[in-house]
Image 1 (cartoon, rainbow, N blue to C red):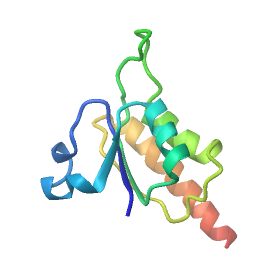
Image 2 (tube, one colour):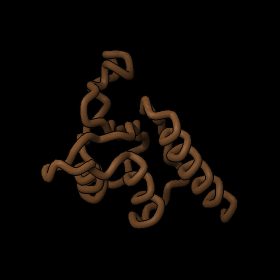
Image 3 (cartoon, rainbow, N blue to C red):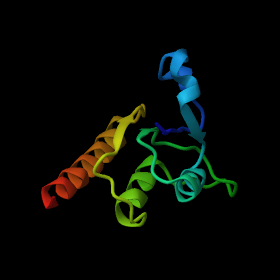
Image 4 (cartoon, helix red, strand yellow):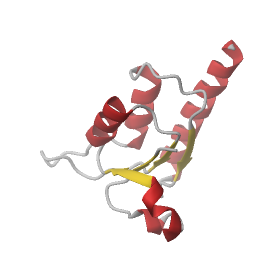
Length: 112
């Protein structure tokens, strides 16, 4: 089972038990997230942070919500079986991400 951890700062053991650390691959930026999925396919589980720091140009980098929007709007992947957690400390963005993904997955499952 593939698992992906999207976070610019945290380590996996800061969110999950250390015993599951080896189950995860890590993406530190939006771009690493997209590249990982394009190369490896959709993981079974994604753990999302929201705020992903600054980009190389010093501007605010695309965040976890942008990553979720990419999955829904641009990836072309079947998300019906995606499991995810939002571990962000940003409660507003966390709810936006949960709402977007849960509603989209629910929509896909109704089409079955």
